[in-house]
Length: 81
Image 1: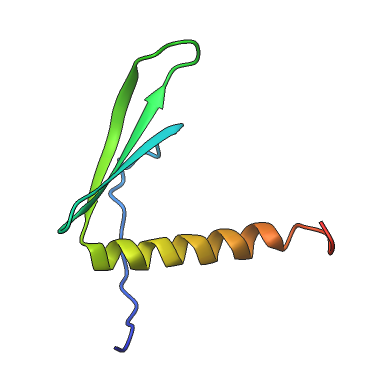
Image 2: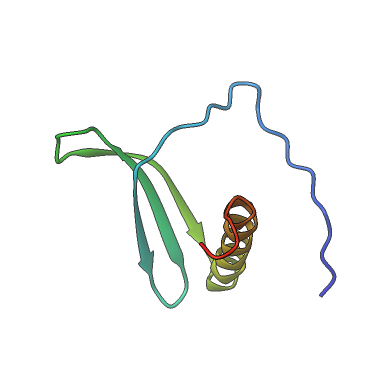
């Protein structure tokens, strides 16, 4: 399958939000990733975002995330670390 590039524009009022907790739930037809922020020294978090992916897209996302993280962080490591 040929991959094509798609331009994605963010709305001017789009804000990045810090999260420090995630939960992944899997069923036969969906993978749900929930992102939350939990304040230090508390046991209550606030859901920031929820993403629902098809299994196929979840696998593609997993591969892309793995590749990107390895490329970024391994270039900073010394040989033999």
